Image (cartoon, rainbow, N blue to C red; front, side, top):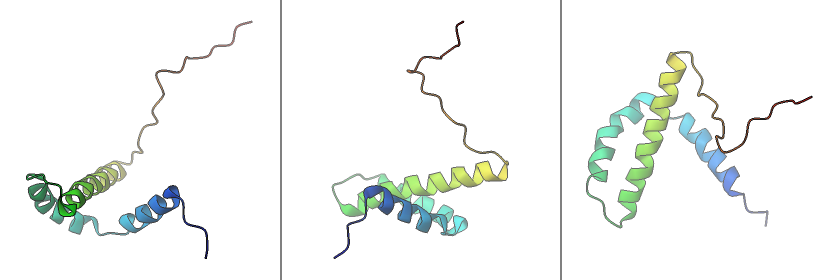
Length: 87
């Protein structure tokens, strides 16, 4: 038996699969996904709809940035102090 994959390895694999999905097909599923999310319950179907919603929106956002020729901005941790050289 081989070693179990780490959570990061699993997420990276899922991300690779998601990035191969057809963006237009994903956008076509948005209304159905939002409709399912409108009635929350404890079912796995509802939980999958929530995850799908965020995946669809993440892909839409990525495509939007790509079309504009932009990359996501790097964020700076505001809690860390700015360092300056003092002589």
